[in-house]
Image (cartoon, rainbow, N blue to C red; front, side, top):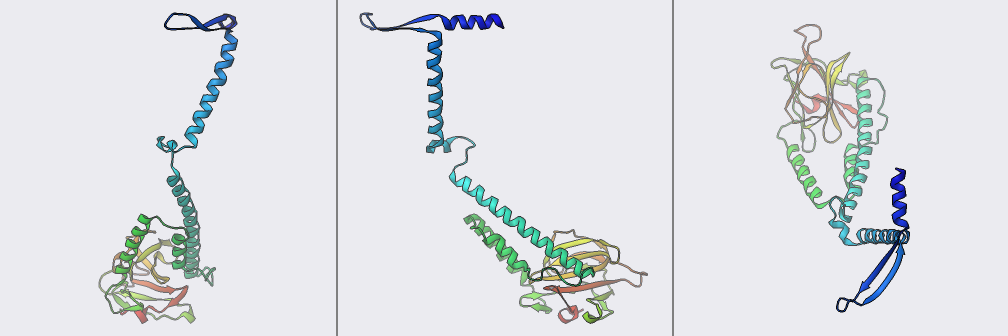
Length: 284
């Protein structure tokens, strides 16, 4: 290592003669005598200056958009916009979770009232997607999905809870008790007389599907107009939390309580956090 270093110092310490000759008569036009150290001290700044000018040329001219992997202004703006939309969606999801948890606690009797009664799911959805401008292709896709949802809401049945909203009976059977909110009876019991299959009363999304100590398996479905249907006392579930279901679609089978002859479904309807009597809107 020491010998190599001495050799480099020896080369840089030598004097070098540079000459320029005329190509016609070979007359010497220019000459210079430089040491290796001086040549090195000239080359290094020149290289640095060239590199710096090249960097400025790439960074501040449109040619940078031709570099593979370098995002242009449009892409960078879209990345920023998508990041802002993602933050808005995360906040909306947190609001949904808090709203659903409050409803589940209220339905199960753990709390006496819903913590945030001012939350409206439609307003959450609208705020989420209109807070930032959508790209043209995103707007077209959203309009198509909204049109599909509107067409799905126009079912033909005679049981209506609000405009363009028709409810199917969740189970074909006999209602064996009545709704009475003053006695904390927020639903009805339906005794199965034919098929044990439980069906969704309307289009919606399952916000809870799981087993509970008191009611066996329970399914809760979020519908339009802040309507929630609750199905308790079922033995087998066909759907999981987060799935979309259509009106009249099979979601479970009715369970048993004390004996095979005492097979019934406990069914509840809640709108805006208030229990409503299912027999007013559904013909069993």
